Length: 146
Image (tube, rainbow, N blue to C red; front, side, top):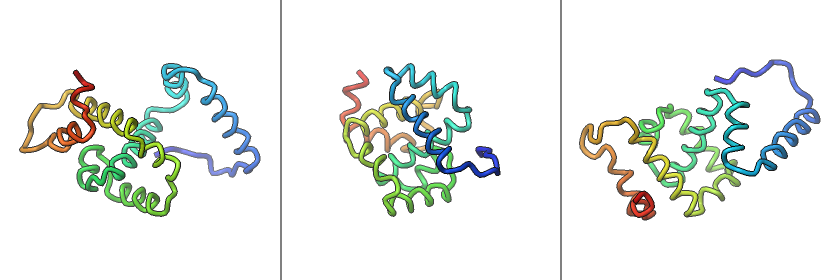
């Protein structure tokens, strides 16, 4: 849970601060510089929250079951429900435009495969990684990993 001060920040001050942050990130030239910047700025918990939210959006867009998302990302069904409602209300319109691009989905699933299989036994129960194997066929990920 992210802690935030109970003292309300004026909208004009917040907008200036937010603009400065966005401008700073926009002016970073490389993935590494962005990674270092966010790595120093955000706590581990904040990074986990952002990464999980982004992953939930991807997975919901791919019509994955809430149960599978719950199991893979270790998030609550309530969290998934809240995000699904926001998607239905088009509150993630800009993020979904990025998600819809095949290249971005292919990259996401390639990276998700590596993260999920890292340190995990190859088979625990029937079909544990079946959904990832199906994605290989859908996005031709197998070729990219070789």
